Length: 330
Image (cartoon, rainbow, N blue to C red; front, top):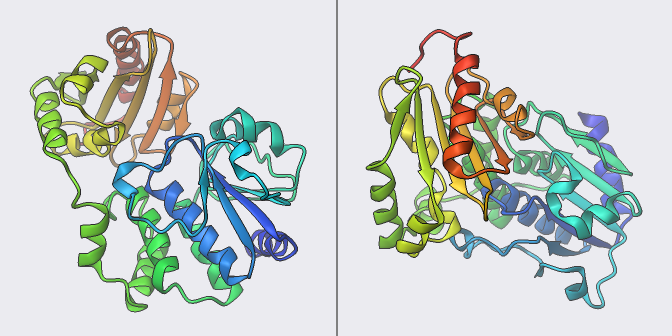
């Protein structure tokens, strides 16, 4: 790990203008890692800009990103990057076609914690699935550079840790993640203020949407799988935002007897996006991989070219087959 960190830091030190990116539809970890990287670059005296094909999600509108945010390369105007830093992406295709076309033609650094990463960086590839979050890796870069995880830099790292560990509840949570979080708190992070800033922002529409969805949760595979179908119609009826579904799948693990949660939402005409969540040793990453998806052992996703109901049917068959290898956990 130390050699990987050294290679990344050297790439940052010899660069002046750094373009920072992460996967489309960024979650708290991708955003925390991006913002943390921008604030780390500022401490090095470097210029940064953020690129993402998506807008900053409404839930994270108060996060200080530390650099301008653009959705097209044309918006960079006079900013000419001499290094591309890609965070939290198992494959370059997840950042969108504009950036994917640049990855092989310019100096690029790949920092990621997903299994199966294609190691597409041209200058450095720091890929470690043992890390719980990409933001954790940014925190270790700050350590190696001699910077304290205080202020906004610490807040960014904590955001990523909190997101990808399910508020430190997932089995993937490691002692090292707790230790890094404790360091950030010792350095001044106020947890009450953090909660208010990033979690106390629900709208009434979101609350009602969750109520609608809970009324239609289905149990399958002998009660071991909780399924929720989300159509465009229900989203529009409740005037919901894309981020309003965040954490709904994980919440359903409170159901007694449920080992796997499957949320399938409409993702355009004839298309669906499936989110898999699991507990303990159950590996949903291998299930998602059968549909061209991936992610983490207990949290993965996939996109399918079929309507939600049809997609759910074929996915449930796969889940049932895999669950036969495990004893009942829920």
